[in-house]
Length: 225
Image (cartoon, rainbow, N blue to C red; front, side, top):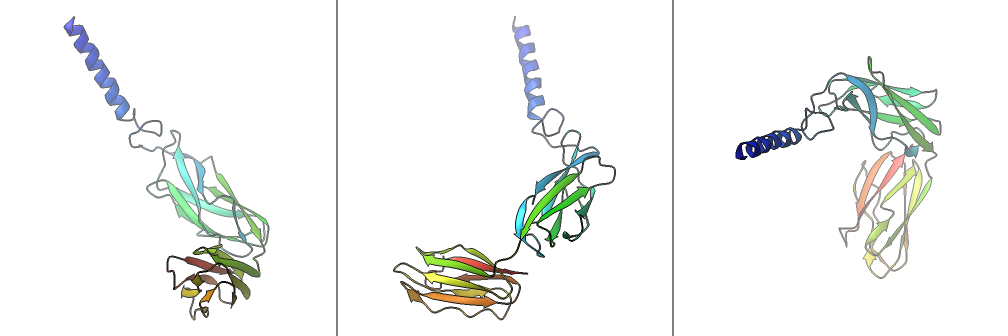
């Protein structure tokens, strides 16, 4: 009786060990993958971004190469191509998947409202398609200053555009530029209650600022084409 019980316990231990080791790799288990040949590219991130004509998207386009067991495959050369004319460009046009099986590129939107980018690899039957949406960059932006915050904290304008800050509440605040292309725009005076301040910016880039009275208040202005 004890012998049979011991055999059953030994069998249970082997089964638990197999489960703990992932059952031979692949995404179905918890152990590390042993990737085979890539059979498909799938979108990782960057799909369906919305941005502005003739500007690079804020985030890169990223795809993952997977084998038949859904293991990420490193070392796969991915070819990136924009579909259609006037739809912008990608850089680089080729990138190689890293140790996590991920490849990326930067996409600059062109003059069309809906852009399509294909990611493919030689010998890999499954490709990935990513999209972006474009609009005209705004010439003006408004930012509210109240309750110890800038709202919104990420204004966007086109070159030559103007940002207007409007004060509210009983606390003193200001707009103090601290980063971006130089020379930085002029900072504001400190106001309490009501008041407005404007910056017209002609140089592309991201400008950061804060309130020097309340340094935890931070925000930015991004100037695009």
